[in-house]
Length: 310
Image 1: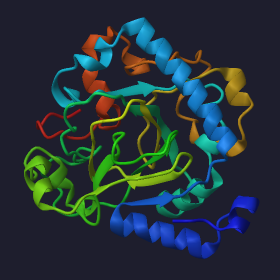
Image 2 (image 1 turned 135 degrees about the vertical axis):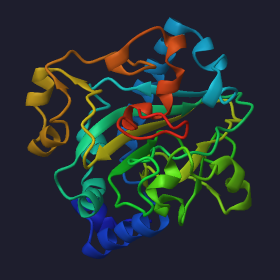
Image 3 (image 1 turned 180 degrees about the vertical axis):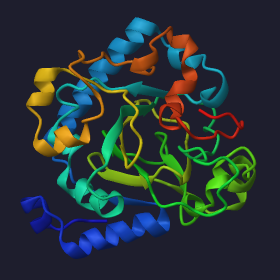
Image 4 (image 1 turned 120 degrees about the horizontal axis):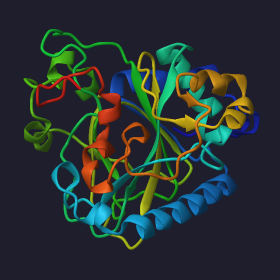
């Protein structure tokens, strides 16, 4: 969706824009608001993220993404938790008025942020990720109907995303509307069905905003270019209370009232983390936490496809 000049100047979406975006998420699983972050802000975020990514690779080596086993094996896909510090915690990232206007309509106004992260597709990947959703079944095999939306992910690409640099591939229009039990151990295998279904590779310009239902099937694709494709990822949750985000007290005190409410369940008063490849709650050696880069932290209390409650 394109927002008009007046909306960009006032930083306020028209009612009809909010309604359309809300309906697209509910029916199609996602919406994209094109070119809504100022170029200067995107450049600042990209520079800071690139410096942090280079620091991380210097610290932990390329094996942190080259030699992974399991889900991300051969993908060169690297998930990293972000420090809650400038420029990543800028108000245009954590509480963009366009995004919150839409999310408010879907989740109400009492939701919170439960994930402050990033996902980067690095050059040289040999295979795509398995097709998946970012949500396990909330009630195992018990619930045979689709549940309301409870979790939305906001993605902000820091570079233009196109076919050759590892775009996200999505299966919209219905996979987010499956019965809850379908996301559990006895549900259909996305890898089996996805090749026979319609999918889209999501092309976005840097500074756009993608808002998606976590249940919509998707996967990362290989980056065939020469530069990394970084993507910020923030999860807004109606009920989830996971505490993965460390926020210094002074930083929290200086947030807006809305931002304070969004992050109220997090670790307030804890020093900001460095960029890390693991849950801040379960810090261990990098090679031991590959599973954490694919959303296990927001499956807590749900049932994975393996049948285990996590």
